[in-house]
Image (cartoon, rainbow, N blue to C red; front, side):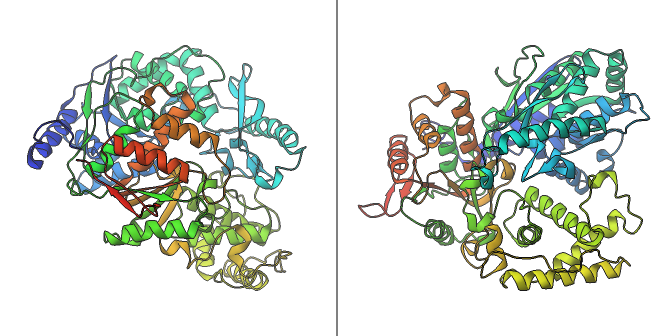
Length: 622
């Protein structure tokens, strides 16, 4: 399907239009007290355009520009591009390039907290970073807390989030009550010690900007420091984030928001436990500017993505190097088939296009839906041996996400410290170790050596435990540490190989056909030549009501009228398919596959159903 009726413009004309739209964003003026919004489709080159704006539009002397995003990766990309353009100074003071959370902490909260002899404030990326915020496979991040007026933060009346209970505790009738009681005690203890995470950070910022005598000073410093604030991926803003943005706007700081409302997939975090007033969402109205040319995907993928939109945005136009490829959407059946079989189907389809394995990506809405052989267990195991094996498996997995690798690295370092010093750490790494024998740099160097020297995971668990403990002892000796643990960790389960302890499959199995895997939220911002999107149920799994509603809503005449939860599930699916450059495959149950096949045929989107009863069928638009 062409992006417009009649004769389609040639690619040079379309690319000229795309370049002009990017230049217009670079030239877009902002002004005090006003918020300018731009909609940018996936693959529109918005990060490159934001960098170009930063490079080519200087700010007044002694002022800077803040470029905010919601991931460290995005900020690192902006800084890298500034350096590559020969202007590394644009990533330094008085400018700010980093995450939205760090900006709140450094410029709205930390400098304005009154000193206290009883505690020093520390911001955590997540509660899971603190050892005392974890217990029995859950963390404080697995709970929702209500607003405490005395503390002016969300630290009261915890409730376990749906799906927060580990699978091994599902049959423990007392587990939820026990862990909920622990969560209430733990968060107050950590709060009194000066620890806070994302929700509490926003509560403190809103309190300082609305209910304190320091508000005028905070806004005056912001106006003096920043000539403009750019918020990238602004669709990820929570209700509290939007309140903060509106307060910054009211302080006469020029604001530019860039995002895609159809990629808003973090609504599940927005609990809104205390009213702050109904703030209009900046993308609820027509944007001041729009980027709708896609430099990443084929037109077939753009057409598929358009059917998943819950907004009224126009269809994207493919202008990248793969714009003219006509590879159809591949529908892969999963009913009654093993993971290895349908993953192999995907691998063959990608191989026929000459796509290397490292460019194969498997994604799903939830971690539990991903092929277990590729991901292992979702939670870090609690047994000492299992925890060490899990960390090693993740760190050696070429398909592990950045977030999962960071968690595995922290898990390995904590296991090393517990092995050497006889007890687990009682404080998060950023705060410091408090141990005279080891600095943070030395610990990370030791981690790299241990990671390299740990035995292969295809040996029996007992042998792996013995060899791993020897590696840990040798590493301790290098730093003059006498390890407190002298025996290998016990293994009570009979397994042929160590990786089987933590749910991983044979490293030579399905991973050979797939380069990476992860949840849609985990791979947001990434891309790959070939993407397989898994929609449950798979294999012999029971019907999935939420998937049924998702498919029904998608293939209905108007997905824009979906309930909030289903609308977000559609946006998650939209984000998933738009990671692809050349090939999108959907892994579907037989019932879902038939519905989707008929829908794509009706929308004249090229598709091919594998293993159809009438033979494999390719349907191309007329």
